[in-house]
Figure (tube, rainbow, N blue to C red):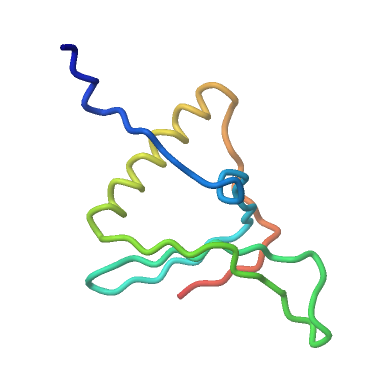
Length: 99
């Protein structure tokens, strides 16, 4: 019998999750055991007090080891994207929030 390639995986999802969510800001926090990635949507309108309004769209909690793999995969994919489509300019119109 032929065995399947080792790096293939069948990904299963429900109809709501497969659509995905849009995020235009991400905040990262961490502690020794984990990284927390909060994906936010910053709305174009401001609160009555003039503050930016953001909604948490998704939260991903992962280990430091996996976070390092994520960063490496993101760097590689950005490199390939820019080779195909040109340099990505950094966004400058979002509020700067850091932890």
